[in-house]
Length: 214
Image (spheres, rainbow, N blue to C red):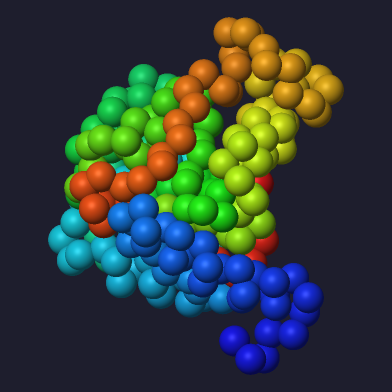
């Protein structure tokens, strides 16, 4: 960590451990990893041998290459390698009974609360109940000052970018700004604030001292 000299890296290395302690006070298991490589190693170490692993859509997981590594070592419920939307939906439902579920978070407040937005609700459903263990991997760029700031980040930053990524027909796709819309294709159907972890330790948060995802 001493070799990380860029201003952003220094900030992440100072703030990250503080957010970890805030998460622990809210009964999450939490870890700070300065680099993506260390984060990948930590995530893999948190998945017991033989666990069936599933995941939610996440640019962070994709950037780190975690899914491909997990496929080499564990049985998986692969929501991506499908032939139809119906098959994908069925696998997403089965994912709620996975042993370990991998995802990111749209935002995390400095006092240790998670805020997530979903169009289909599969990620927030898994986070709230179902899988035995949920591992949340998030770059430090997703840390916001307060839970209100976390919600604002998720709605005003992450959601419009994801609307561009998925090319959905929403006002935020057209304008780049949240309109609090009621569009049938809105990707903000479900919003979940996770203020503490129950049962204790079910949710494991791995913070990464890099800018990852949206």
